[in-house]
Image (tube, helix red, strand yellow):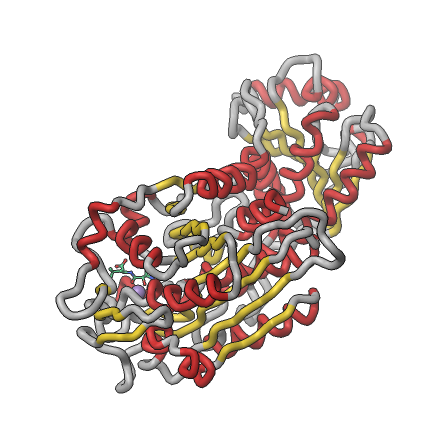
Length: 500
Ligand code: BES
Ligand code: MN
Ligand code: ZN
């Protein structure tokens, strides 16, 4: 989708569909301008259709040649105009979806904010439209008959200064880097598990790294065995597909003025989670190809980071394995020696994410990370606690957790804190080993995080995001498509930029 800016008069904008956001249906303002161009017909029609520009109300009509645009869609904003980026993204994603169909190939959106807020509105328009534009249709052998929007014209207020237009052009480049990162993550999540297994994920990481200039190191099973990552390796033992630990590195060029922390992003990359011998029931297994949403988010974020080139060192680790039931599968009551030396008794092979992550977190700390963020589709309990659209955030450092929350808020991603309750730590006690891999019946998201904490060095700040809900969507919703959502990419990128 090609994006351009213009200051064209609203009635002269040429497009298949023109979407205009309206606060009210008064004669002054944009509604009045349009109504005048349409000889007062718009007000009549709006009254007939009971369109009052209330929030979320839509009025779509053919302009019958009265405007440059073939069709007009009015989108009500109501009294409270959006202020935050996330709200703008949703509004413009709705605008994009309202314009889809009607053989629309060119779309124009009008922006209305005055200079101060225009950047945020414009970023929201680009993100909203581009993210809603995403489709995963490469496995459809017949083309979808609904044509796709090829050009997007953002119509700016006529008084917008030239220098502001210039900064919008650079914003456009940065925004498209972010969208590409998010859509890359979505693609990876949507790939079926017979196509995207750990070795394939490693191959794609290598290719991506080469394209954008990252270092990429792949640890195969021999290497992991040599290092002693037995907890990670156990998860993949029941699968015909060997595991991989993928390590991406971004180092800024040139010398830095002040010393900055080394950041590590760690993602759970279980390319299919059958549950292992603690097998999932059939209906719980559906969509478990998406159990690598954390790794996908780190993959996409590293890609965007390489393009945005912040002045801070960032490592990305993807812990890729397939959890199956083959004859070499790890068992319940197995005792494993983790990479950090702790012994772990397996009580449920479906609690596999924490095992691949545990060894990977140790490795990230060992490689000199000062701050670690991990993302994982870790627990069903997280969906019970916070619903489908919100990730849980837990941390060993309140200040870092607040910084991650701030980055999420700025990105329009919903995360909410859960406490790392010490009183639940005893539920991880094993009668025979140092620790077992599941807690008790309650507080499942918290005990999973407490398990991960066992593999973080004392001097390392660590924040865990349980993205089991928001990384996959059952339905199209504003800028979020059905399937892989790319959740986490925007927050990670924002956090890294904030720390640079
Ligand atoms: N991948 C699942 C968690 C999950 C469930 C993600 C639903 C997305 C949607 C994870 O590996 C898992 O199976 N967790 C178990 C842990 C339990 C055995 C302690 C769970 O949540 O039931
Ligand atoms: Mn599982
Ligand atoms: Zn899992």
